Length: 43
Image 1: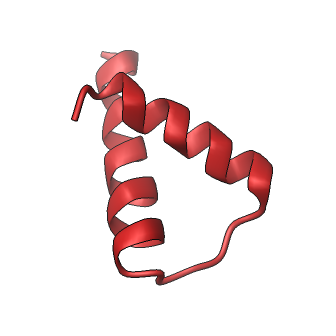
Image 2 (image 1 turned 45 degrees about the vertical axis):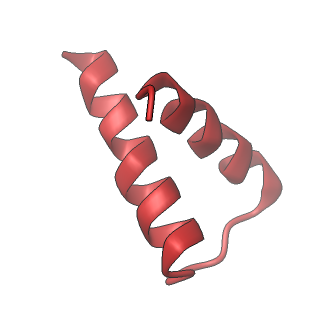
């Protein structure tokens, strides 16, 4: 359950909002963390 939530956060907050729409800016540690969560989603 936690893994599904974390990977969903990587998709929503990372790939969709941060990289696709650039709706906010994030420092490098947060970008790396979101990229790891996104990779865990397998997309």
